[in-house]
Image (tube, rainbow, N blue to C red; front, side, top):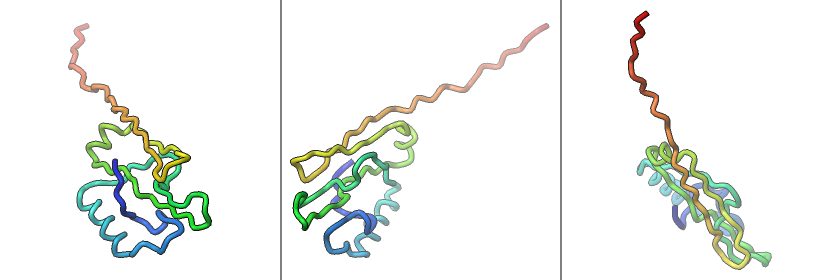
Length: 114
C-alpha cells in the first residue's frame, strides 16, 4: 500500500495532459510480472489532487494497494477506504486487515459398532 506515482489506465487522471501510453503499459506489465494485482478500495479513487478549488483542478490515482495471491487468500476479508481530507493534496487510506479464519474441515474417522 503506497504512493506509486504512476498510473495503470488513462482514466486514472483528470485535468492534465494524457499520461504516455508506454508508461501505462510498462507499469501494468511490471505489476503483473511481479505476481501482484490491485486490491480495490472503497471511496473516492483519485487519491491526489492539485488546485482543488480552481478551474485548473488536477486529479490522479497515485496511491494503490498491490497484493499477491497468498496475501489475498489470507486477508480476503480485508477492507480499504479512502477518506476525504479537506486541506490536503492527498487522500488518506485506511486499511482494516481482517484475517480470514478458515475452519479446519479434517475429521477423524469413526467406526460405529452396532
